[in-house]
Image 1 (cartoon, rainbow, N blue to C red):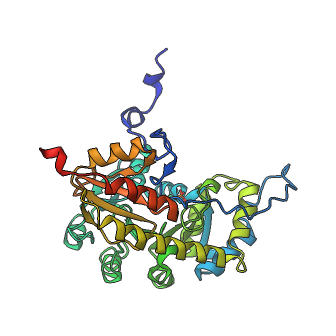
Image 2 (image 1 turned 180 degrees about the vertical axis):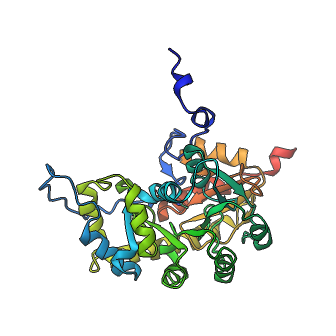
Length: 359
Ligand SMILES: *Cc1c(COP(=O)(O)O)cnc(C)c1O
């Protein structure tokens, strides 16, 4: 029997998402997945009631996130990372091979991959040179589009989408589609969140996660913020017990209003390290352009990303190649690590002389 004959054609054709872990490099400095450099190690797990299924949508966790984000508990869905929610939205709103999603590369890869898995078509509108959305192109290509994914701040470029552009898109798509703002990195610049717009625009959805600023990527916990009608539809398609009991327990502790200060101080540390790293990068002759960032990663264009990527790898330092994305030739994305990790990557980069390549 040929198993492949049984599988769906789009899965046979699928190039799976190349997660940082799957790529399988060896190294000892991991600057390729935008994780926080150290583990919080402050949370206790009480280990009671593990014989029981967990709450479907745990109250304390939801309430704590409501306080942190400034929305009502009935405007929140908790899921297995925000990656799960990217897909749940498609399950609710897109008819396979009929409806479309839209997104604006260079951007996060999971919008496309999730659509491919579910057999949902997509329309790509490349971002403009300043990495803002191309409003005219969006407007003229909206037919059959149900969901628009915008990453804000954008991964991998590190920039925010102007709120005026967000509002224009919301106006263009009124009654036709939802705008999903992926705010995986918004904790590094919370004032820029669109969260206050949720009560004004019923078709705005915000994705959040504990994987980045909260230093809990291993927990797999994300949140969807939207009007209660959207939340109720998402609850219809999520699995019956989506969040494991230990995850609920630890996430609720991390979001305890009395403990948010730990996350705040982690964020301040990252901002300081980013400034230090950028200052050092400016002195490296292998660096072509450093793109501004308000997040825990920076996109850097090198004279030769092959040379730099390989030399870093030889020193056990793993960064993320982004050069396959439109407009990002020779670009690598560097996660802001600890101060020590920033020093170590700079020490290697400062010694690379791009000129020798061309002689
Ligand atoms: C890391 C990341 C996610 C995934 O977050 P999880 O909650 O860990 O699934 C989603 N969107 C963007 C843009 C990311 O960079």
